[in-house]
Amino acid sequence: MKYHSFPGTDLFVSQLCFGCWGITSDFHWGQRAEVESVDAMLAAVDAGVNFFDTAPMYGEGASETLLGKVVAENNLRDKLVIASKIRPDKMRPSDVVADCEESLARLQTDYLDLYQTHWTSPDVPIADTWGAMRELQTQGKVRHIGVCNAGVGDMGDLLPLQKPLTNQLPYNLIARMIEFEVQPRCVDEGIGILVYSPLMHGMLADKYKTAAEVPDGRARSRHFTTDRPKARHGEPGCEAETFAALDRIRAIAASVESSMAELALAWTIAKPGIVSIIAGARNADQARQNSGFLERTFPTETIDQLDQATEELKNALGSNPDLWDGGDNSRYR
Image 1 (cartoon, helix red, strand yellow):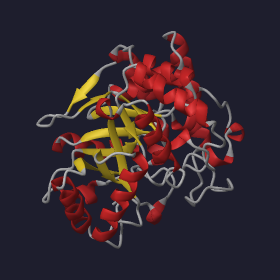
Image 2: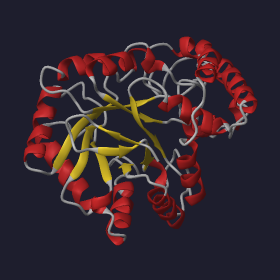
Image 3: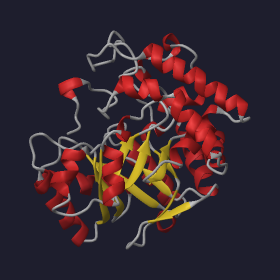
């Protein structure tokens, strides 16, 4: 496992982060068996993963609770970097403090290594939220602070106050929207990018050959027609471009004797500003497999081929990084 050290800090994280969104059952991932999720987390640790990302929104606190149980029962706290987030409706300073305390209790710890805004709020100035986060940092309840889903406008408001350590963003071969504006700004400012949805909910793991095969819970993104029952983006979608791109990726993977998932993760970590890739795992085998995928690197020619294979889709999706909300409803600013 390779690791990233943040300059000027003692934070040292694995390039693969275990994403805890899917360790408990919900409408998006479906049913999850707790014993398999526990096995997956422990297998990831055994493979060298020291970075775990969760949030109170995941399973309405169930994700934090299960992660806290696993960490406590296996005496792992001093070995792991644990990141969590503020709920979007808890961005007022008094709510930030209460939300953090609740997360600490569920996680059975007295500090978080990284505390992040989950989404910025249109109703609460980011300066107010950030002030509360800095106070938590002063108290030792939070070691480092960052953001998730912050656009260039959000970062413009934040940078005069303090540079966030990280910005957690959706990014993968078939969701390259941050390349237009957000990624270059992060690189210029030295803000580390944490990537979520690197396999686009299984689509880049070669789980689905057609749009019809994708379950409604995973077909909410702007790739799919707005007619899907759980979609809310209000856009036509890019189903033809998406599955044409997947076909091209599949062919490139075959030409270099790689799985699509291995190729997708290798492409992502090779991109500017990316410090860690957040990927979940249903069971121990998937966790070990994900860890192994990042051991292989590919030549520049292959990375360039993948860029070309997904350029049409990149342009069709445009510069809005929001996977689920389109047009004026985008939560990025």
